[in-house]
Length: 338
Ligand SMILES: [Zn+2]
Image (cartoon, rainbow, N blue to C red; front, side, top):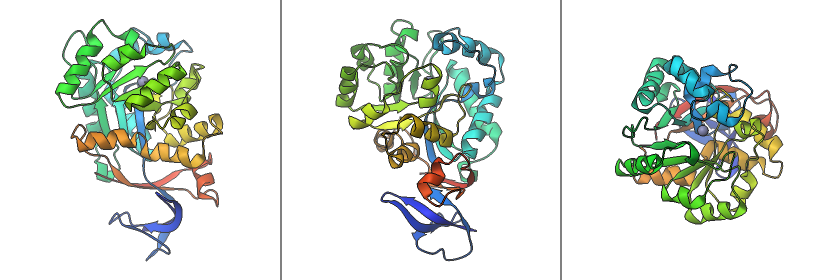
């Protein structure tokens, strides 16, 4: 069965159709029977911690440091939990809400990355069957080597002396990406951050204007997680980042704090950033970190980016209003490997 309705293209919405069998789409009337809906590219979740998804509802109402810092609630929970099952649950939630790509930050060294692989395998489905593609960002533990190619570093103050530099170098040598939580609850020094030569920064809630300019000048990708930031009373600098022309992505952050539902993140962004056009927000959800990730695929630092389409319920006549409507549901997904 084809899909028909408003189809989001690079030039905005046009009347069109999509064939989930062949992956072809077109403008105008569908060449056969079709399900009506709003047809979008799939979402990209540019910052998640799938591992703690099943801790949702258990996280105490504490500060950021007490929740996710070293020896905080999250790390105690991860040490006891069936993390692979938690990852599977997170992936199912992401897939069900139309997300084809997740940049996942995995704690716990090599066993942590193995849990991620197991969580994806346990879900028992392929990208063609609707599984999100995961780009894993690992983290060394106990002075051991960086597991995998990509480094997903915590904030600078949560790193042992020299550990961040070492992991960043190991990621570079392995041809991977370096991502860093930066200036989330407290301002951190830009110079020290730049020494790590990161590709992607996450948060920047406490960065000064000068810091943001310095980050724009070196062309780093930045991921913001507005629902997660709001929980800790932190201000997400989305308007400033966009005004500086920074390559921005949206993330849902810790699975224990926020759902992996990008539609929920989008609705929250629309309320929180009324000055950012809804079309721009939608582009961020569908094509977040586009420059950074495309550059990474060209240099073989990540293998490929998924593509495809998702079909949303046509709950409103205007397609943009339908996307941001709280009743919006993902009716179907068709993900393809890039
Ligand atoms: Zn994070």
